[in-house]
Image 1 (cartoon, helix red, strand yellow):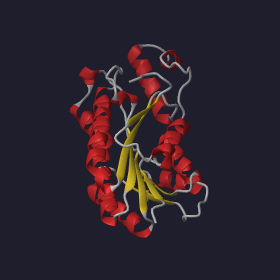
Image 2 (image 1 turned 60 degrees about the vertical axis):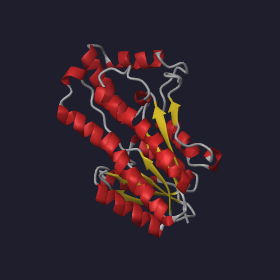
Image 3 (image 1 turned 45 degrees about the horizontal axis):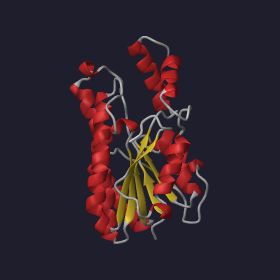
Image 4 (image 1 turned 90 degrees about the vertical axis):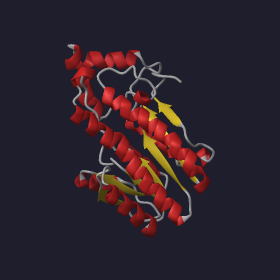
Length: 257
């Protein structure tokens, strides 16, 4: 009984696409978000699966007790097979203008949230003795600092890539695989906000910023949330049985390592 997958930040964007992809692959999905109504809307939109009905829950990823309680509950009732740490935020400001408050908030949600929820998931998986899989959403900005106006975000996502490796190394003997995905320029509501912010900071139009993104991408198109979801589906499949500790780029070639 390990057919349940928990997704954080599943109320919209990449998280909703991941939930959909996993449901299509037969996973019973527990959609979490700090916005419960958004999580419920995603869960209601998912295709039915044999494993059981999809569920929704409110989760603040910085709440250790809440994350632990959710992981233990899902493990006991449904069988926790996978946990996807997808929740994240971004602000765009010049490095010299980033406040300590904004820095702390970005690191709390993007990095500490992955630590807290990853720890909760791992503990529940170890206690159940069935192994499992964890996927963390990092970013192309977790592999290079050449990203304008996102210094705090870059720091958080570099941290996610390193944390993923540390988790994979320690949790492997317990049969738990841990990987991260590194999206590039993904067309989501978050990116729409970033286009407006970056255009304002550069003194250009949003469409000019988007063209810069396209010019940097060999495949010549922005990524979609579904592009990222497909890779998460792969990482949680038997096809990736020997893959752990990786930071898999999904960026159309915009950054190659």
